[in-house]
Length: 318
Image 1 (cartoon, rainbow, N blue to C red):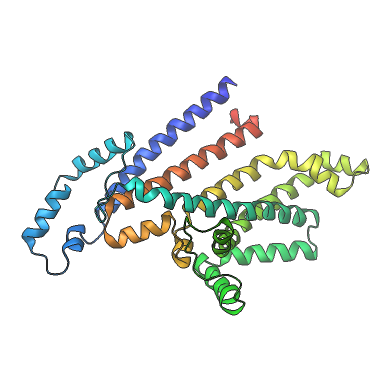
Image 2: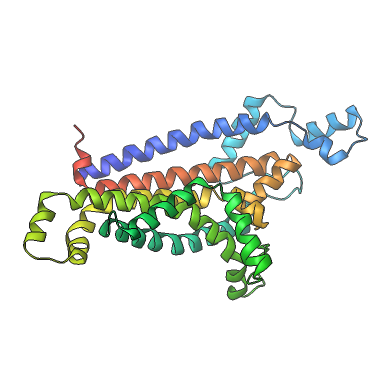
């Protein structure tokens, strides 16, 4: 147990250091974006004197290292800064958008995780049969297609031709949960297509590898049925790699939704970040990028810990 806690502490420390490095990269990258918020505020007729005055008022004329340290100091105190475009606290802009993104990721995970695990088990159980080939080819096709293409195909057939759900997902807090669910279903299905294939293929590969083990052969010789072998003898030993890939795909559902949110005009954190880039609202872009990075690092840490707990041999690398 002590070794496990020490390993978790080391991974946590490494994660915090990685986040610090990423914060510097994000700040420098966002600062290098073309355009200027002062020009955006004043418009095309802005004079150089007025632009300089606005930049001085917003603190944009300070050296970059001073601005980074001010930003980092605010982050450590829970202050994400002030929006340059709206003059509102960044955290108030991000709050609802982040919840919308989490709702969408949660709905997509509820659909994709059981579906992927079930298809993976079926493909492994009926290996080299028609079922396996259909599942494998479908997953390869889903992996090969970009998210925006899947999204537009779904809009064309489900929304435009069949008219089952609206093509735009403009959810609002005043809507009932059923209305919100109806608006979120198309982006959730798009994300399911993107992530389901990875989890299905990992489940299939892990189970096929275990099904060739001597102890599984012994179970077959004892007369156990294929489903009983899968449930009682194979799945318990396959959880570590499967849970790892499931956790990493859930992280992707949160951090990789930018394209899907833009296509469906879904008011999530990814859409807010894209809008803020267009407005040159740097504090909002920096905060959204850092939240995505922190989420990915956190889920990476969770995947590592789950893998170690599931397989204690990882505590003793060769």
